[in-house]
Image 1: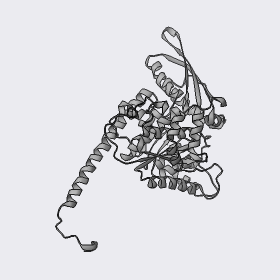
Image 2: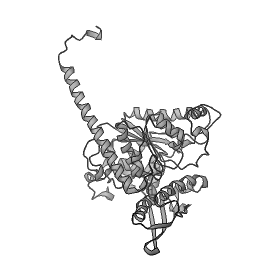
Image 3: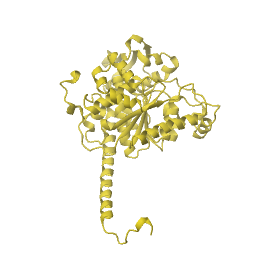
Image 4: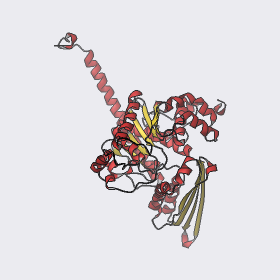
Amino acid sequence: MEHHANHDPAASQPAVGAAWTRGRVGLWLIGARGSVATTVAVGVHALAAGIAPPTGCTTAGPGFAEVPLPGFDEIVIGGHDVSTVPLGQRAEQLAASGMIPSAIVAAVRDELDRTDAEIRPAIAPDEHGGTQRDVVSRLAADIIAFRDRNGLAHVTVVDVSSTEPLPADRPEFHDPALLAAALADPERAVLPPSSLAALAAVEAGASFAGFTPSAGLGLPALRAIAQSRIAFAGQDGKTGETLLRTVLAPMFVDRGMQVLSWAGANLLGGGDGQTLADPEAVRSKLASKTRGLHSLVGDHVVAPLHIDNVPDLGDVKTAWDHVHAEGFLSSRITLQTTWTAYDSMLAAPLVIDLARLLSLAGAAGVRGVVPALGSFFKDPWGSDVHAFADQSAALRSWASDLGEQVTGADAASAVEDAAGAGAAAAPTAEPVPIGGVR
């Protein structure tokens, strides 16, 4: 392809140490035909074909070279979505907007069509008939069928759907027994779509990552159900402005500078801009974006933040921050930052990272929340650490330790298999009965 004429495909692949031996894995996307999911699908197929480098993928860095992670060509994608626009058409739309090189979309068009065939209808907000228990069972059955149909060793579900308004609190959100009774009642609809999808992932035995600030698996009753059954992490992907804040804020603190105010403004269009124009939907996003900042610099800091829908910007997001701090002898310090990027391009490699890392967690039999994945999220579950450098160090340590555990288990299994094969080949003390009947 002309766009990558000088690119060496071999250079696209990350350094590999210990090999992944567990077979193909699945990435099931909630919101599978949205901008982020479409970018993920294009990216996975381009990386698998060696026509693009893994730029932006944390797990392709040198700190992960010896960790046995599934290769890009070992990831199979499926998902749920209420949209019926084919994935290939969505990719062409993103290419037309200038976000994805059209040559890459054309090169992986056949793979996108095959991925689109793995996308199933999601629960629509106005879906009627039956109970929410029936809906969860249907969604879980789709994930299980995807796993079995493709012979997958593990499936990771990642929610990249549009942000929902946060539901009002209710007793069922805190008591699994009350929740179970409500789900079985055809007259009641207690869970939002994101939580139905998350519960389906748990029941299908799939790992789960909440990449949006929607309720999802964040409800206490659902977290309690998931804790002993799957590995999970969240919440709300940390891709741009918040990422920058969690890098810069520790600098002020470590240098003894007193942050007085940290104001922010976000401009974006596209589907996200449209969704976040709803005051109820944006409430959860604003909360997750400011919680980490206050944790790092203190609750006293004035931190106004707003998000504006600017339709003509499309998928390009611009974030402005203005920081006012006090230095030595009460001197004034001002820092202003501007961050502009295609938001889906920032999110997609992180979703791929989460699929690889949660597949590793699944292979190691990890259950419950995984705090070590906190570097990927604005509001990390199971952790009060927000400084990006600390989160990154914790991630590398966790992945390395888990990789050694999985590699050791694979080696032990190979020894057992070899011993078993030798025993099977050795003469038996007793003749083998004909027809299997003694």
